[in-house]
Length: 241
Image 1 (cartoon, helix red, strand yellow):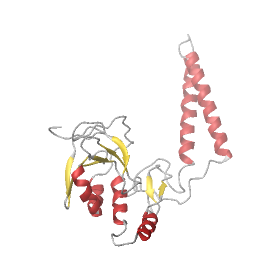
Image 2: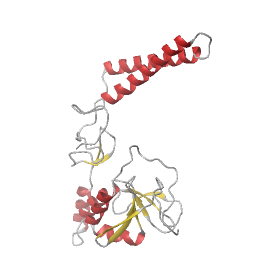
Image 3: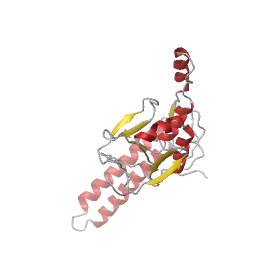
Image 4: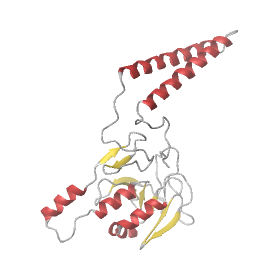
């Protein structure tokens, strides 16, 4: 493809960035990074370059970007999801034509971790297999935003909230009852609003139904955010200072 390469996720122009002997292009909005086939081997041999590129392009999108097709910024062919052979926990999208790789935000950090813990070439096969098994990072999910993190991390890389080793607790019986009541109030309000909104002199009952619907659905959303939050953290997600 000729001209300016564009991000396959959000359509913005990609910015070129050099880290040592590795040059790549990334998106300043979603944090994705394009690595051409000729540069990937250098990237695997230089974990610090992967870390530099990860830090250079950070995800600024308020919500995850979901796309059904990912066109290759280099040649235009549709890229396909794949896992790296050298780092099976790293998910990328690969171009079947030119071999370019697209790393979503956070995947280069996993690659840098795997590359820095790869076995030495002089180790025996048994030692290499044992070292590889022990060096593979364990993945935990943030109870605050749901993003993947390494198990040895203290805070989530995406939202900055403390990581808890155990999964978030299930809602109590009181929470489930309150959720059921909120859904009942919201559903009754929706029926009341829909039945009286177009009827003569039904404005008052339609307004009551609207208030019930908003109150029920708002209460349900608030309850579901509250019981998933860690203690002493805010109800709504945000970035730590």
